[in-house]
Image 1 (tube, protein in one colour):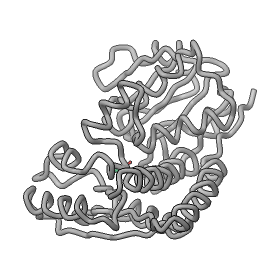
Image 2 (cartoon, protein in one colour):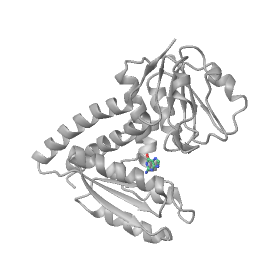
Image 3 (tube, protein in one colour):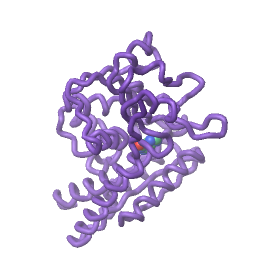
Image 4 (cartoon, protein in one colour):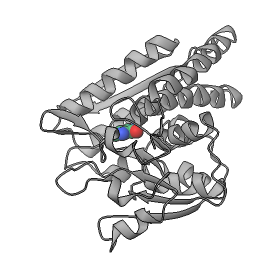
Length: 287
Ligand code: GUN
């Protein structure tokens, strides 16, 4: 059996088309949607991701502000930058690119962002709303994956979903989004015993490990007809790879995402959508 490729580029484009339309509608109301990014240090992967986010904003008519900070910046200096962006009425979304250099605290940083500008859905306010099924701004990678299921008409009710990730950006928001759709969700992580046993039982596996020296999701680990969403992206032997090899896993899976060209483009598309949502939210409360 050969499964269906879930093409992130195609699905992301359909999201971007809708975002572009929404951006035009906001501009007609006098609101010029704008995303501010904060990039700290010289991590080349982070720099590439931020560049791609700016490029995508340009494509759909979202304005951007680009803050590049020295890798040695202190927590209080970073807090001032975030406070200024929170107060800036022309900025609707704020994204601090992660990971941060070691001297900076991720929670102190992300929780400093105004919840209505929190396009990553990482503030305690927005993470809490998600757990209560009331979120307006949800982390981009998880909502992008949900969009992929929706695009392909994949019914999640009663499905056994295994997450291999427990981060605030991926695993935890996904857990809530999948539960909302009545899936049965198991969260696995680096201390899980007998991961293969969980994978074998899964109708859907969402894998985000990102280190081939520690973990590879092989066809032998999945059941026939499973759906595999590969969130990981890393460099291995000079190639960009995920946790699985698409050409092999698709022989056994009913649906699978490639890397690159799968989840990555969806993360960017959902960031654009969140920026539009944030711009609408601030216009509703008159800011
Ligand atoms: N680093 C990797 N993915 C993300 C993301 O979705 N948001 C932020 N802020 N940083 C990231």
